[in-house]
Length: 79
Image: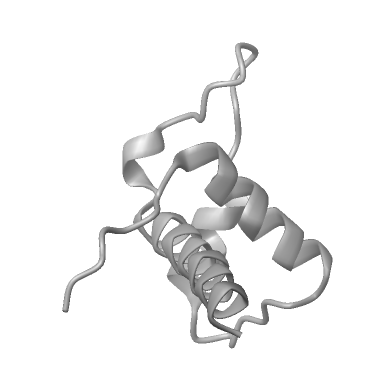
């Protein structure tokens, strides 16, 4: 069955940052596009993400981290 995605931007960025900070995400050297996206990800003086529409790999990582958060919440309610 299909479950709606949990993809709010700011909580997703926080989830990725938390996992990166806790060394819970590792990149193989072949993941060059994702590594490049993350190295260019920045904000302007107003706090807006610069060139937000080009970060497809970083967005994918954000979606993945948010799904892990959602899945762990489901497990917490079941067990």
